[in-house]
Amino acid sequence: MKLDLLHQKLIATARANPPSDHVPFAFAKRIMARLPGRTAPDPWALWSHALWRAAALCVAVMLVSTAWTLLATNRTVPANDLSQDFENTLVAAVGQDQPADSAW
Image (cartoon, rainbow, N blue to C red):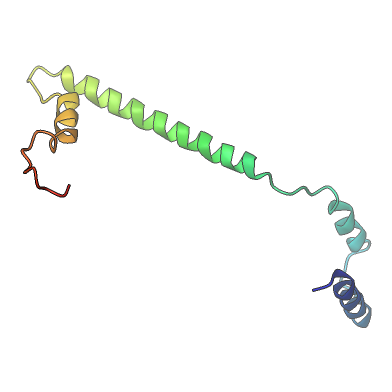
C-alpha cells in the first residue's frame, strides 16, 4: 500500500471523528513527543542477552553437578563414580561388536 494514500485515509478518518471531552489536554502532543525517542530493538543485543542467560544456566548446572560429584565421593560407603558411569554410557556403543556389513 502506498504511504501517501494511507496517510490521507488516516487523516480523513481522524477529521471525521473529532476528539471527545474524555481525552486529556495535550494527549496527542505527549504521544507524538515520545515517538522520536523510540528506537528499534537491536537484534544483536537481544541475542547477546539470551546467550548470557544461557551461559548463566550452564554454569549453574555445572556447579550442581560438581557438588553432586564431590558429595557422592566423600561418603564412607563406596559409591559409583559419576565420571566412570558417564564415560561408560557415552562409549557403550563403541565396545559392541558390530557386523562388517552393517549399514551404520
